[in-house]
Length: 590
Image (cartoon, rainbow, N blue to C red):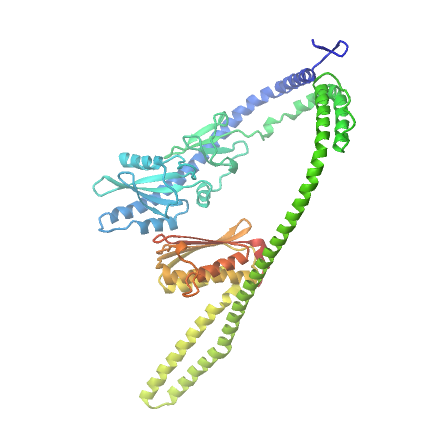
């Protein structure tokens, strides 16, 4: 035993606290373990039965989804097998149709017998992992469908692949067709579906490397399920894949709460806890209170008063160290005071300069945006005025001209003159139709009457069908009508996009999606046309090249939204617009 200050024993505070805490843990653990031991044995058998049923149910769900994807792939594989006998057959249209019609897959891939990627729809933006090629070669070797684990290249996203062989008319595997599933993306959420595990049995869907594809807890996605996390689970295999369903235990069941035993032992537990806490607190509270008071004085700037002696244990050593630190800080404070004053002066000067520069930049940006808003508002007002004048004056005049020509035709006995008048009346009727079409393009009444969703659907069907382009809609309902200027801006952007498709894209199919994603409105327009080099289209006042895209982007940015264009020559075009709903809300009527 070490001696200090007149032969008094130097007792360790760590020893006192450790002794009291160990006694408390051992005492309370013994009481609680005796009460819960029997209940846990009964519960273990009940939970095992529940977990087994849940595991089989979840595994069956994913088996059905994989079979659906394999069935879709077999349809495309049959089309590609028929195309193999056609000279110059291009597989890309079939892959694009499969992608646009798929509910679950993010990419469709085509490999030859050597495992080389032949085509992909849409185009890949990352290299394939070597394991993907090996899986495709495995399908060529055994001629059977196959589902892979989660695979990736370097730090790219994880993908799982479903492969089917394309068997030629000679009975040999000529090529391999695959579909990609990407956890965390919208189509994979549709693949998982609405699964709800029992409260006793949250589940994980893992591949052969124990990487999580799906789980009741979204935070577990793509984690590695360790052996400790899988201890006590029930495993059910997902047929036609290397995946497994691991069902773990949830301890929220009332069976794990034998309240009457806890109630009987509660007074004893409270008494022991109070006794141990009192002992620990008494041995530590007094010296710590002294140090706390000294700390408060130092915190208030009193560096002259020494720290009192509080003992010879660890707290006493802490007090002496703190007193030495007090002296060092007092010495440093004098030097820091002068440095602080100089630094604050320089910071104030620099801050003032930056504030002035930022204010000037914000003012210029505000003026630019205000001018742009006024220009766009003036354009819409002029469109509305022209449409009204065409309706009230020009259209009425042309209609009256047609009526007068019809009356003159009926009163003219000369057949030649009547034929000339009828031809003029047909030209007047055609002019009336063109004027009405121009009125609708200038300001469609469906936008004011029915709102943005109906206006987009009407305009897309009207323009694309006239050019022989098939259009498919995935339109969701908006929570309320948007502000009129927001609806007008979004409709003009969509109108410009559809006009570009009819003029330049040479597309056969177009997909229009509109819906609400969280607190943002999302519009996506995708076509299978020729695409273009977005980086090579720069705004040019001389020939108006690129000004349409610039105007679309500025309209969206004025709404606080984002404008993204994904295209390349030969790969179609994907336009995505997102605006915040909070700023766009305008009530139930325009």
